[in-house]
Length: 275
Image 1 (cartoon, rainbow, N blue to C red):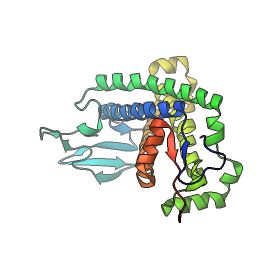
Image 2 (image 1 turned 45 degrees about the horizontal axis):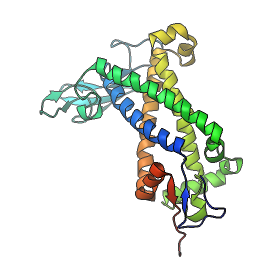
Image 3 (image 1 turned 90 degrees about the horizontal axis):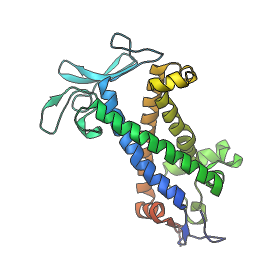
Image 4 (image 1 turned 90 degrees about the vertical axis):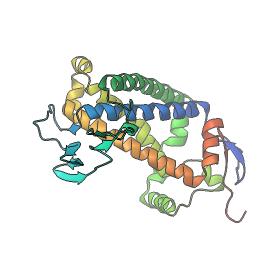
């Protein structure tokens, strides 16, 4: 983030470099496609297990399906009714369908495991290559070290709690304080870039028979292929939660200013109160 030596509220600064902006939009579209195609792949066997093996006769820790005339979500034996949303829903023609996730949440919208895999695997390579390019660029231009990695003082419990309270009260930084990311933003972005995305990639590779033959240690690392599938699903759910919170924060903190910054790089610092 570049700007004047002493920026003030109302100043227009350059907040995001080109590599960050390109990766943001590439990654946003890629994750969107991978989440929706992944849900279609999940529809082929809507059960999750721990360990190496898992089949219909084995105990699943999570299952989405239908029982009688209702849709159900079963988590560790606890049954939750999801009729009309998960397990049992109607397609655009009004025909009742018994699959885990509805048509509007999947790519493709009609059931096709083969097509979903094509979409998923193609964009998995887009995710890997774009993430590698972003990390290399961030290391070269210093973005990762300068803007994203938390400083020791920011990790103090008092500093963390102050930032949590400010977010809960919807009090966003203004003036010069808005030039840099807050500690919660840093932890969230670093967690996604250095945690969630690598885990998604590695657990995805662990489910591939070809990768198992080449790198059998990956299976041991995650405790079995079915455990890797469960971790992959949980990481995808965490990614969706991050996206929802991120979009909420964008809307609450000024969507036009935030979108302009991510499209053009230009960001206007919010004015301090009383100015």
